[in-house]
Image (cartoon, rainbow, N blue to C red; front, side, top):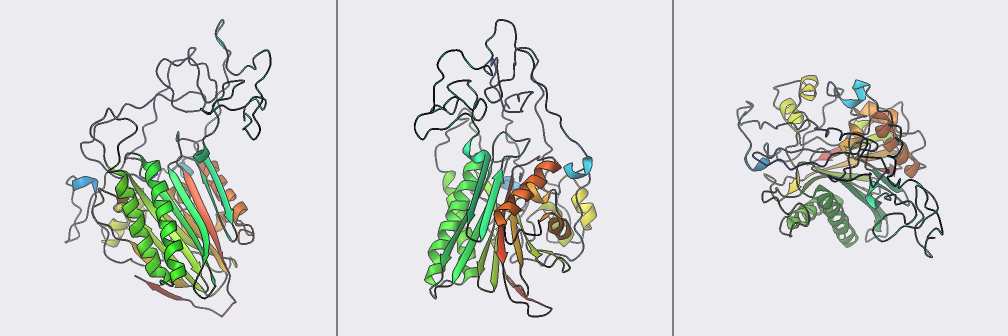
Length: 440
């Protein structure tokens, strides 16, 4: 999940995680509401404290500025975009995929004598689900009440955003909470529309909530929805797709900014809260034209159907590591090995230093697949070649299945973050070597 620094931000008290499933539990709870773990028999497990990188902006003379960034920003990305380097991208040292770490599910302990066990089916008549109601995923017998708990065994049901899938014609997306986070702070939107001449346009937007900001889940949902709606409004009017993508990112930023003006509904006892924030990456396929747009460190990749041709990364991160490499202060291996590598320097939010939407237009010369994803996926397939190897060979024909496989790849790698990916197949007639590319 994307992180941005927040100087002098008071630390909020984190709820202790359940030893059985890592869901947060309230002080004084005897049992976990998610998995039924007996909390009275064990001491609370220590909270997981992930490392939060501190961003260091680059001054005009190319030197690293060690001062605390103002307004939580590490500096603004430059105008326009830079073409991604051809050299293979290095994975940060000690990343989850390299560490070999894995977790074993803790065995469920025996309930304390005399204490009710919520995992046990109660005696007597079982409340059946109402017509059209949900069936409990745990006991598969009881119905689910309005609060999301089984009326038979009391098991909390998965939240809607914990795992989301959508397939719409030739575009599909999957989002998952991952294995370490208590909620999914990613969001996506996929859609199709028609241009004035009747030709189709396919849209995919993926957003990653900034975990160090307040209400990141709301920020990502607002941005994805606003960007998608803006594209569905402008493309049928004949706005050039690249301009439409730029306007969609601006609309997404305005939607996230508006959240900062709304009353805070949770954790209201804390007076000092930073503004909601998220990253965004989107792609639009129109005829033989591929448009991508982004702010932050969510990415888009090109994976050709013919794997004898090289894959490519289509976006350049707004991050500390990318900034160091662009300034010539570090090579990629050094930059991505630094603990500050994934600190973002651009995002959508009211406290963003400056909004600099990036857009790029491509005309691929062969059929392939556009992978639009958050860092929850590319942390486990960072280089274009690694991403190409992770994409199933039939993903162009089965985009939903391909997205499911890629989410599984991230979960198998450790699932340390929320993971979201959208796949857009791109079909053209072979026209020989070479391709045209225009970026702004």
